Amino acid sequence: MMSIENLIDDFSFLDGWEDRYRYLIELGNKLPHFSDTQKREEWKISGCQSQVWIIPHFEKNTIHFEGDSDAIIVRGIIAVVLEIFKDKSAQEILDIDVEEIFDKLGLREHITPNRRNGMLSMVDKIKYYAEQALKGQNEYSRISG
Image (cartoon, rainbow, N blue to C red; front, side):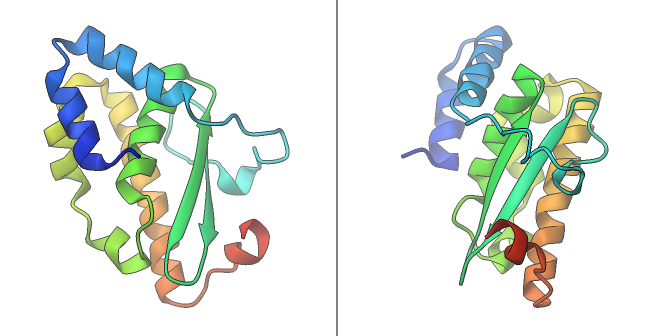
């Protein structure tokens, strides 16, 4: 079972960014591909150069996410972002310092500005879903859960 600590350890053991990019691609390849019916506009993340979709699934105390993209490195970034927020409550999601984790992984300085902006757009959308869940306005749960 992967955890964010495992990811940080794995990234630190890799020699250079070429190896880390390969690892991101490997992580992305483990994500299931979305069907055309899952690639709906409401799940699409704006602010990403590539097409990115993240679907929330609201459960009693946690929110689970699925993600996909049409770009291979971005799929790896999605895998990392989903790992950060996996099995967390809405409040835990809001409390996570994502920038600190990105720094530990070295993502801030080693991915392109466009990918970084897209990554932050993913995080913003996930935090939006968490805010809605806390407000009891998770209308998405009827659709996705």
